[in-house]
Structures are given as structure tokens and as C-alpha cells.
Length: 294
Image (cartoon, rainbow, N blue to C red; front, top):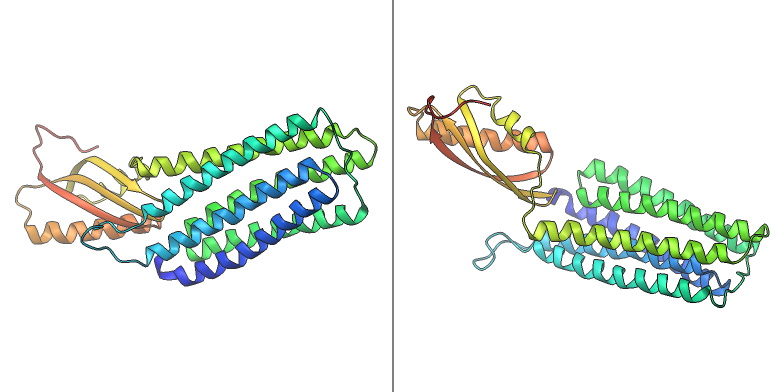
């Protein structure tokens, strides 16, 4: 991803502009036609723009080299920024839900026009196009930021579909409570997005496991000279992983051969997982009585 950071930044900037445009149209339109669900959907759409900002921040920080005080770099600033966004989304979700509950006491009938429905349909098409474009670019550039953000946008499409059909139902004669119920439902989507952001980034800060151990073990043990592997640990993000492990080799293996083997393993692991991995390998002498190759 780091090799293509300029292209990733360009994609994120384009998508950021589109997401803000969509969120702005939904919010203003929801206010003008007195639709609680569309207002909530507009707030939800702003979370996409917030995700883009975090992505841009992460890409920018990834260019900053390590220093004596930060030998592992400054990547975790991205996680702290994400936590702030997650907390903001949480409070927004609660606010939207409480506003929906209050609206039950004095419901307003949305003033739904053909023009407003067309505008909502256009924003929905933009969301679909953004999700497809971002996912395609993410696969091309091998960017986990773009791929995961595209998945977030794709989930928003279902919310917008729900808002569209609730307004259509009201236009066909159903009561205004349908709109209020949909706004409460959207608030749960906002809270779910906040939970996912908080869960994932707290996990990274607490050094949760990143990669599947079975796949790592399979790569390591594909080398016949390696008799066993244990104490496999991974941490970091899906874009940049730190890994350490212990391998067992014959006691007469030279330091030079072990060094070349370590580099070979690092390259193979990066190829297997398609991600930047820094691997620290501790070499131990193999004792057949004590260890079994798994």
C-alpha cells in the first residue's frame, strides 16, 4: 500500500468529495421535507466522509519515517483518530434515536415530492458507484483502507434503500410514523458503525492477533529444513503487520544459512498474505525428543 500511497490518496479525496456531497444533499433535503429518516441517513452518510479523513490521515502519517523516540513509526495515531470518530458517531446515533422517540409525541408528515424522491434516488446511485469504484481500486492497489471503506459504504446503501421505500410508502398513504420508525432504525446502523470502529481500533491498540496462525504455520513448515515452529505472534493492522516466531532447525545449521532462510520466510509470508510484514525469527536447535513437527 505504501508504494501506491499517492494513488490511494487521490482515490480517497475523490470519494471524500462525493460522500460529503451525498451527505449534504440528504441532510438538507431531510430538513426541507421534514423527514426524520432522511436526516438520520444524512448524518449516517457523514460517517463515510469521516472514514475517508481517517484514511487520508493514515496514508499521510505512513510517509513519516521512524525516529529515535518512535522506532515503530507513528501509525497508531490513525487508531486514536478513529476512536474519536467512533465516539462521535456513538453520540450522534444516540441523539438521532432520542430525537426519533421525541418525534412520536408530535409527528410531522414529510412533504414528499417527486423531485425529492428523484434527488434521493440520485444519491443512492452515487453511493452504489462509489462503493464499486472504491472496491475495484482497493483490489488494484492492494489497499485495505479502500477495501474496508468500500464495505462500509456498501452497508449504507441498504440503509438508503430503506429510507427511500419508507418515504415512498408514506407518499402512497401510510402514516408518518413509518418515517420516525425508519429514523430509529437508522440510528441503530449509526451505533453499529460506531461499535465496529471502536472495536477494531481498540483491538489494534491492544495488539490483538491479526493473521491466521494455521496459514503462517503452513508456510513455515513447507521448508523441510524447519522441524517445528511455535510462539507465533502477530500484531498491527491489515496494512502493516509485525510478526515474531520461533523455528526449530538442525543444530549444525550455520548462521549464514539461517539468515538466508529467515529472509526467504519473510518474503513468502508477504506473498501469502499480500501485506507488508516485518518478521522477527528466533532460531532454536531441534531436539527430536522434545519437539514434534506439526
